[in-house]
Image 1 (spheres, one colour):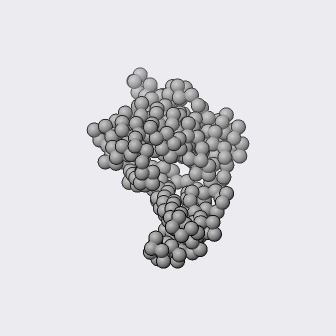
Image 2: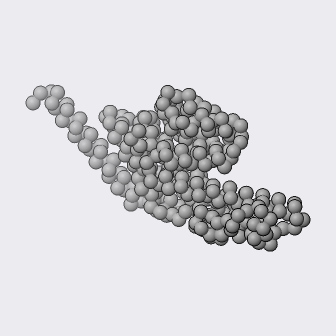
Image 3: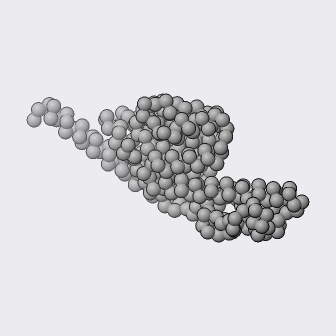
Length: 315
């Protein structure tokens, strides 16, 4: 047997042992879920060490860590745990091993940024992840979109959101909505229209079912928030003209302010309260709404469900 063949066989054997060790570690971790301290101890969190151990197969190791990040988020989310301490480190190692793994940035930020129970409530970690992704993938418009989306929805920094959309719009390959979003952010105008465009773009730019369903739910919530806002303005106009609050929707209709009885996207009538507020009849059926809730009520959230593994977009 030649020396080259012996070296190849030894390398293959070492690789197989490394993969077996990695799978064994994941198996042990899966059986230690109740002990977060044990989980932390079992993870190698140095990408430099992992690169040396991977024998050049860093892409494969990155996929393993990315898969584990998705599983970890899904398990913690489904169990109702507020402990997401491993999520940011898992994503950091994943992207350091493979800086071109775009789904880790796109879906990782979606896991990190939203407040519990929809996410980990770590917008700062999501921001760092997106900035690292853009640094290593400056030609990917989706990353600039995700960054602008993060600034707009979670950090309420409209100037930085406008800058992110503007940078993404300047790329050779981009989305037609990017320059429009940049302009609207810069003008601080059209809040409902801008938010609607963001969620429509999110729906159109991904094939991942969970992200698309989340976009649909937010679009329904936006419709309710906008309709409740408009109805409450109508109530104010009625009071200004008549000197009193309307007692029913019929008062508004007779005064020519509305036609028929307004209903929410689920088909239920909006309630006109004695103090002039508008309330949704069944708010538990329309997630994420911020308008039309009883005083002190929190925006309803979707029920916790097992999270499917995120899939990479092919384009």
